[in-house]
Image 1 (tube, rainbow, N blue to C red):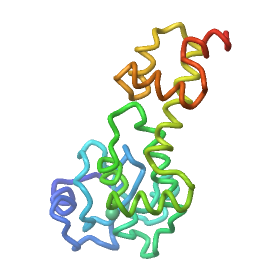
Image 2 (image 1 turned 90 degrees about the horizontal axis):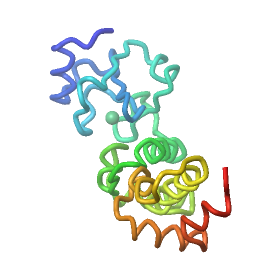
Image 3 (image 1 turned 135 degrees about the vertical axis):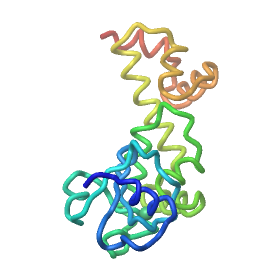
Image 4 (image 1 turned 180 degrees about the vertical axis):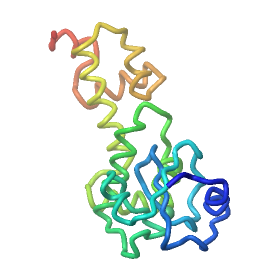
Length: 182
Ligand SMILES: [Zn+2]
């Protein structure tokens, strides 16, 4: 269904007049909501409209935790999958806990608590793991300067990047590259 101005106004105003008839998915986060969901208003260009509740799930969208678009409690496991999707998609950006919480429709403290209890890691630790994992792949597969790679994985501060890298792998990025020629 096309996103008409009327439906867009309903989504923006969190009105419940269309609840149960249409659902909207946000392409950038792969989360879908009821029109009345009070979460942050997405970019209009990222919005996909569904008129059948089976469709968002078929298209790979996951239900929003606060608004429960399938009228079932969203499990912590599904929420953790949503959080992981966002971490994997936006690791290269300045992703703070509060920004992450906005993207996955929760409060920062609740997010940290649920994530930690389900995975044993804090979201920021998981984000750092993803960044370092991407960095090792770039070190092996490219000849790009370390500072470029640091920037590419979301850590613009090169010396901070080197410090964290060394903490995790016990060697510097230069040494890592020398040990793992492609
Ligand atoms: Zn929602």
